[in-house]
Length: 397
Image 1 (cartoon, rainbow, N blue to C red):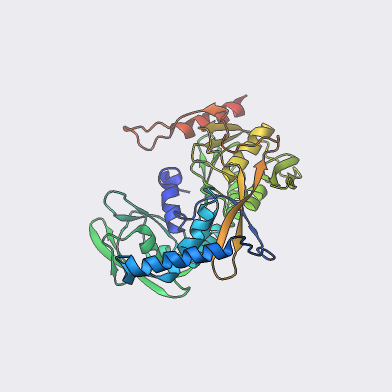
Image 2 (cartoon, rainbow, N blue to C red):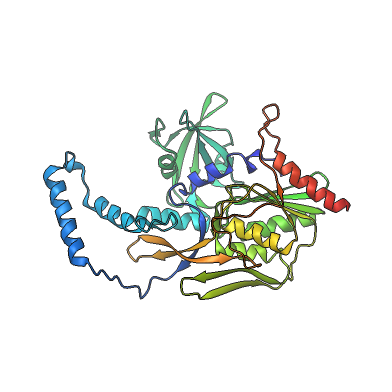
C-alpha cells in the first residue's frame, strides 16, 4: 500500500464531512428500543398554554413572520427539550439528521466513494481520497482534484455538507462532477452505488513493524481491522503500532469485538446504569496479541478509543504513547422515536478492566509525546516515530 500522509493530517475533517458527523458527534453509543416508553408531563397544561402564548406573540409581532415554518419551531422545541438536560452527549435528531446518523454509524452510504475536505479560508473543496474500486475510482477521479461543479450546481460559497448532499443519491443514478486538475477542467460521470467507508488503513513500516490507523469505530471497522491484522501477519510483521489519534469513538460492540483480537482472557469493559445494573464484556483470550505493541493517542482520542487504549494499558500488553486522551467515559443509547426522528441519551458509565473510570480524566499515556510540526519536513511525525522506536526496542530486547 502506498504511504498516505492522510493517516493523521486532515483524516478526521474529511471523513466527518463526508458522513455528516460534523453536527452528529462521535462518542460511544449502542442501539436501544424505545418501546414501552410513555411520555408523562406533570405540567402539560402550563406548557401548552405557554407555547400558545409564544405562538401568538410570534404571529403578531415577529418581523419575519412570513418565513416562519411551524415544523421548524417544533423541531427546535424537541431539540431544546433535550438540550436543557445540560448533557453535551444527549440530543435530538430530525428526520434528515437521523438518516445521516444511521448512515454514519453503519459506515455504509450511497454515493461515489470520495472523501472531501474544505479549506476554511477559501472555501475550496478538494478530493482528498478516492476509495479503491469505488464509483469515483472507476469514473477517473483522483485525490487532489478540486471540485467546481456537481451536475448543474456550480460551487461558489456552499458548505461542504451541502455539496456532499448533491453528490449522494439513489443507487444506480448518475452524477456528473466537474473538477480542476492541474489547472485544467475535467468532467467525469459516476454511477452512485453503496460504498463502505474506509475506516482502517495499514502499511508495513521499516523493520517489519506493522502500522494500522483506525479513523473511528463503525459497523464496518471490525472486518477492516481484522483484514489489516491478517495482511500484516502474512507479510511477516514483528511488531505493531495502532494509531487512534483523532478517533472520536463509535460503536461499543465494534470496539469490544476488535479488542477480542488482541487481549488475553478476562474483562474488556463493563457498563453501569443509574440503577447500578452492570453488564460486562469479556474476552476468551484465544487471539491474544503477543508481539511488541504500541498504541498512539492524543487529546482528541475519545470514548471507544479510550476503551481500546485503556484496556491495553490495564493488561500491560502495549505501550500507550502520545498525549492524554479526551476523557469521555459515558455511553449513549440511540432511540428510534417512530416517526423518522431519533434521540441519543446518556444511559450509563463505563469502566475499564481494572475497574477504573476515565470520565473527565482521560487515559494518561505511558510515554508522553506532544506532536511537533516540522516546517522543514512537514511529513515528519515525531509521535509516530517514537511509537515505532518503542516497538523496535522491544523487538531487540
